[in-house]
Amino acid sequence: MTAALELRHFIGGEWVGQPEVESRNPFDDSVVAVVASGTAATVADAVAAAQAAQPAWEALPAPKRGAILLDAADLLRSRQRAVAEDLVREEGKTLAEAMGEVRRAIDVFRFFGSLGWRASGDVFPSNTPDTMVYTRREPLGVVGLVTPWNFPIAIPAWKLAPALISGNTVVLKPAELTPRSVHNLASVLAEAGLPDGVLNIVNGKGSVVGEALAAHPDVAAISFTGSTKVGEHIRGVVQGRRGRVQLEMGGKNALVVLDDADPDVAAAVAAAGGFGLTGQACTATSRVIATGGIHDAFVDALAKVAATIVPGDGLADGAMMGPVVSDAQLATDLAALEKARADGNLIGGESDGRLLRPAVVTGLPADHSVVTDEVFGPLIAVLPTTDLDAAIEAVNSSAYGLAAGICTTNLASAQHFAARAHAGVIKVNRPTAGLDLNVPFGGVKASSTNTFREQGEAALEFYTWSKTVYLGHDR
Ligand code: NAP
Ligand code: MG
Image (cartoon, rainbow, N blue to C red):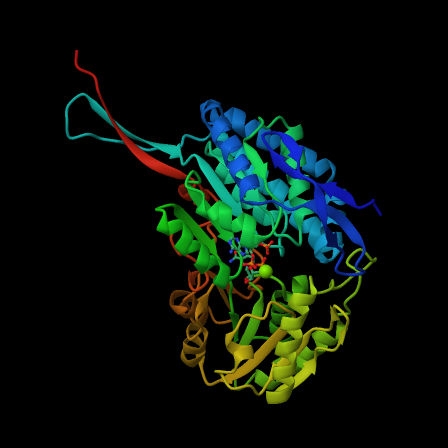
């Protein structure tokens, strides 16, 4: 166990500010860090540092920018275990989950680092003789990143890497609950030779630091991941000053289970999607819509899996599920469980402080709040349906549209579903949660701005603008 670390802001290459706010381990309440809490003035300093550093960063050849990301990835790999343990201590997920998440950050840095070697524009034929037309992708300038606590290193990494490789400088506001993972990310970038001011971090409250960042006139764009409520507020602030904004927000992700599926296989898919990461994933399965012939067998199989999952300390050997991240999130989970118990048939869901047993609820009406609202906990509502088309209608009745899944052995049913489900990510016979890093990611409806995608090469579009050059050469 490492001592509580003092965490400062990172501005212009200096660690600054007075650590004052305690960050605690959700498993045992031990203090894991004491953190500086920024103000609008701290944000202004960070934006000024980012602005000062931007022209030189943009002028550095892209392969050299990429080399810094690649070296940072190597450093992160060399301390993967320690960084993962820090992540468990501040967020609570299991060490296996945290090792996977840190691995994701490493791979994201490698992917975007190597993109530094790729040409970034297109060449076109011109209608005018002796003229070449090509496009350049220009950086936006200073970009602001606002990130949630549930993937405290992977989400910052998947925003930072495309921002930096494109020649932008960054001000990042980590979630107040999980500042240490971003501190570790900044440390490896600084050690890898990232020039001062290219990445700046301001810790503190969203309502203060996030708000000031979104409102700052010199921040060209904001990429935000978090709740729909906060995201929609930020959209108003940033668009009000004609900034560019990308929001990835909540979900109420459904898994359809058809009669032709194997109930045990479908239960394993649902449990991985719904109970993994303590249900605290934006793409978590929180609704299952099962056709009549499999519904009861599926519920039995899912309840059996749920009963085997024992929550505990994420750092303990063989930990299966970590604690709920905070008392505020626990209150949300317990309120949903209470409603599920009152209005339906609840299986599981017992709590011992922040340790929550996974839960399955049946018998709720389709318009019940547990079926329609994001909970962000290990609770799956199962609803019966008649056939595939009715199931698709139920999937699409949600205000959200992030991920949707189907368990079926029928290819035609799978393709019918993939074409008609209104969600940004479709999973066939795979858990709704869990993404590849090299492919576009994002949602529709209340889950996303649904303009720019994150991850893969698609992520570069948000962090750049396109310029068209006509190059004539008369002789
Ligand atoms: P959140 O409460 O919306 O917070 C997200 C970030 O916004 C935090 O850094 C927060 O700061 C900050 N913030 C809060 N108020 C702000 C304001 N007025 N202006 C600017 N920034 C502000 O979300 P969360 O509780 O951390 O995370 C859970 C949510 O994230 C869930 O809804 C989940 O579905 C969503 N999520 C979505 C995705 C996706 O890709 N679609 C991925 C993961 C999570 P604080 O430190 O003060 O909280
Ligand atoms: Mg929050």
